[in-house]
Image (cartoon, rainbow, N blue to C red; front, side, top):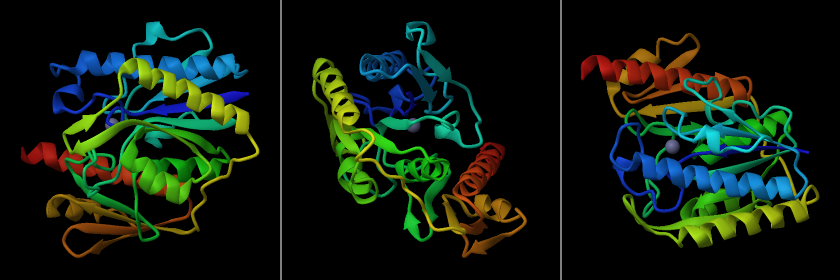
Length: 278
Ligand SMILES: [Zn+2]
């Protein structure tokens, strides 16, 4: 059995400050080590439970956060950025997927770093009218590939909101209880690692009978709403896209993978405009 882990940072325990989130920031090393420890606990418990190969997609920011030399022999790491289907690149062919360190979508109250993809340029992403979290985008992309998401570990608000709505079969492991966008109460690392391990055991005991695929109806109507009208203006030059007022662009995608690729494209366009005007 092969397992795929997509690991983000903002839903991990004790990660609450902008100083945690990017290369060179003062708390970045602390965040890398928390991310690596949580990933190791998840991979080790999968391996103990009979999974012989684990692919881990480092899925935050520059996507080179995990400390590679700490990974055991049965783990491969997907590293680097940009990637066309960003957080789930490398998952194809896996038997099961687990999400670690995931967080809630933009506008979720009391939720650390509520955003989807890039809060600097994107206000919201909608799929068939539904405001999408990163969980929703990634689980739907995997659903199209036939890979079930069987465990989500991260911010409690995401588990209570999107995970229970769209993947009620998945085991949820809360790693932090947010008090606001930049504050949370998290169990000790010892407790978090224990909870990740018992979540994996529960998932493996239930697998595969409880699992299901999140599949969206196609074609998918994608809407991307930006933080600046200039981003939408440039994004709307994509053939087949259409402006929605000043802030948004609409695009009809034949598949979830196409919707994801176009979202990535439009995000990078917006980031390009942002850096050109700064
Ligand atoms: Zn992230």
